[in-house]
Image 1 (cartoon, helix red, strand yellow):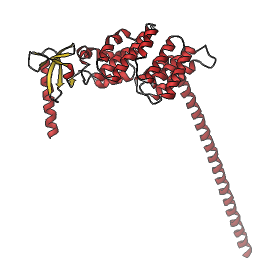
Image 2: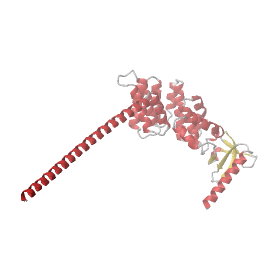
Image 3: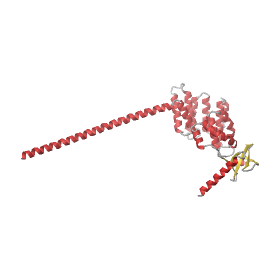
Image 4: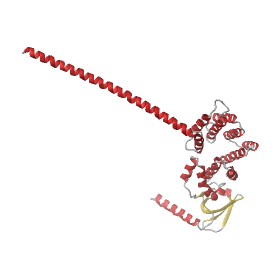
Length: 338
């Protein structure tokens, strides 16, 4: 009963907050102070390291240092499940269509810890995977401003990839030297080598990642997919390498990391190389072999059944013959006795 009452109180509070949003300018959020106190606010802007906001039902602006705010809680109006499904399935256009409207309000507040950081990273990653480097550059500094080592690394990796896209390899190598993660640094080295027309050397670098950083799930999947693209680049330059090398590597990545964006990207490559057709043929051949085995099994069983039935019939006939013989002998004996 207490839980029901609490839920009703919270629901009522949020509905009041939503109604107030219609008449009070700014972005609605719950601000958590360093002492843990939570305040309903309408955020106005974040500039020069200072956050300006209005308290609920107050028209007065309050400005405080952003680093004095413990966290912010936003109230996004989108389907979080649909967002996750779109992102994990590699539908980056749909991901962006969901997130871009929301981030027009929330993005500037990312340097303060908040419940929209993960969605912000998904948006950034979607731009990167779509090769939309103009938007990637727009948000690189904001990623770094989050003061999160993992996000700073993502931002630097994105900077390197943007430089590679511009064929500015000196800049790419300079920024790469600032990346602290050994696996990420090797991954970028492989990307640079591939972009410079050295796919064989890039694959060799991926081999080092697999051998020395096989447990680094941040960069191993991307590195393995990169190897598939390198194999594709090497097609026709090596008697051992063929399109199948790229296709089967992409297939392995999509299967190993199923349900993730990298798996979705691998599946796109796999399909583009005819992998789905090859798989359909393989499954058809497997079904045909299974049907043939089943038919052979049924024929063997039918033959064994026929053999058993013939043996049973033979035994029955022999038994009846013996019975008839005994009956005939008894009849003859009785006749002689008379």
